[in-house]
Length: 536
Image 1: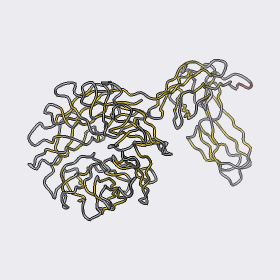
Image 2 (image 1 turned 90 degrees about the vertical axis):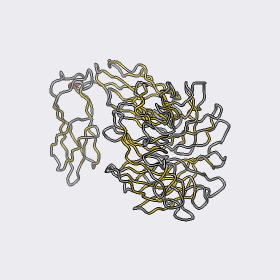
Image 3 (image 1 turned 180 degrees about the vertical axis):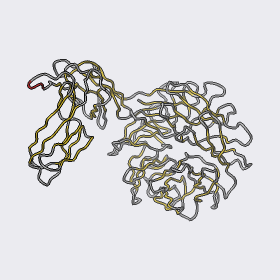
Image 4 (image 1 turned 90 degrees about the horizontal axis):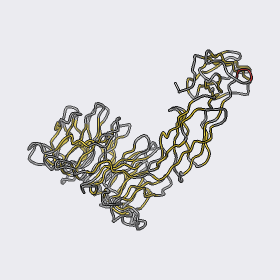
């Protein structure tokens, strides 16, 4: 119930004339649908268009022939109304928006319900009108990433005229260092991987070094910015060490990841581990010598049955060229595919995988392929298909090390740290038919980003976001970038802006529901050992 608005049980009836054989669909505020058939039939729906006794209602007619109708309302309570025939006078709620740039948008809410999305500066008004005495609270629900929007004059009570003084101001977002690693001798340092965020707003990730044994950590950053080291690797001779990949979280809060080295077997080939919410580690699998998988660097994925999938850049049956592995819920490992199976096959996958709705797996290799510069591949029922071989031209990308993402049409997107028109990396798209398009070549100017090692994320408008390890406006310390759906690049932030700023991001970003971006840098910060950052 919204403050200051009287709600009571009510009905809205419609008398339809002239309908004959055609049906008419009605809905209350876009929901609670009713389908009406015979002419003259009276049906009940919750809602209607207008307001009486401080009750808002709207009926939407979805499909109809040319016909006449009479709407009748039976309102109970709320003290009647005002105006002719008891009709309550309503007023619009609006104001003015300023500061949005091209391809940016902001979504507003009144009282947490009535939503309005804006993509252009100027006057605005909410779709629903309010009666005199109704309270309103206008807030920012979400915004384009790297945009900061605020509301002034957003709270009040409707008087006897339209509300026009609500002001929404937007500007370029700012970067905030949420945490600087190396704060103590047992703290983690050098975070290379992407973060994962829980429903309470806490962030989780890994560091390659640091911790109680200086062999890496799993950490948590609370919504208030407090860091906890959940686990320090190297706690025993059989423990994993040096985690390079990120984490995934299951529905009960358990975390899963890989370490590049360590494990129960003397081969020192790495592990797959689980960390409980209380910080207890379980080694799910220790990798062995070839033909087993060796050296997992990328993130894991989990299917609906709880099986885990990942890649290793070594091991397998073909000259230590890398593998795709599966860990069942019982801890049994299967080498799903061994790379280097033919002259044009990819080798050395360092990124994680993605899975489509049919269970097919997609990923990248850093080397191999028809041109020796890496591949994009698909695994279907254990059979591999090389979808694309990089290095096909002098301006093509090379040495892909990033995870892929897939849009609703089946197109794949990723980055390469090398190649491109300027030799500093690319953003690419692989169509469902295997055709590659270079969406952007980095190093286009002196302050552009260079060498994107992390993957991409995509917003609802089709814009892509990522990081580069180098380039930018401050001593080649890296950037956060945006690629619009039309291929235009914007550097959203250049790292190294001051002595305490982060430097050299290599991981993919994550985005919350409000459009804020989160990520890590491998160096910099107040202690020089990396940061967790937010771009609002």
